Image (cartoon, rainbow, N blue to C red):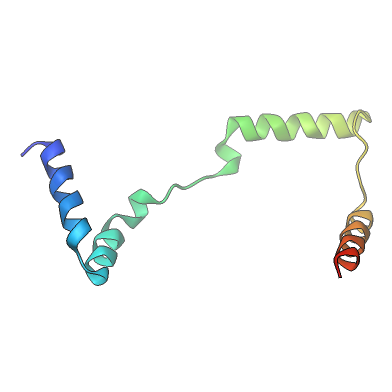
Length: 81
């Protein structure tokens, strides 16, 4: 049986399967279905992080203190109330 035929049969089966059957099929493939993302392996993420760090350390970008961020968030919450 070809892969295309198997896919078609699986689609047909899943479309008519009850909830327990769908969950059972999903549990078999769950590890392969779930995309595992590790930001420390993502070169684009690391490049962005490094660039932001350089910008901050060089003074090109001014950082914001955690306390200031908290205060702004509290002010916005109060304004919505």
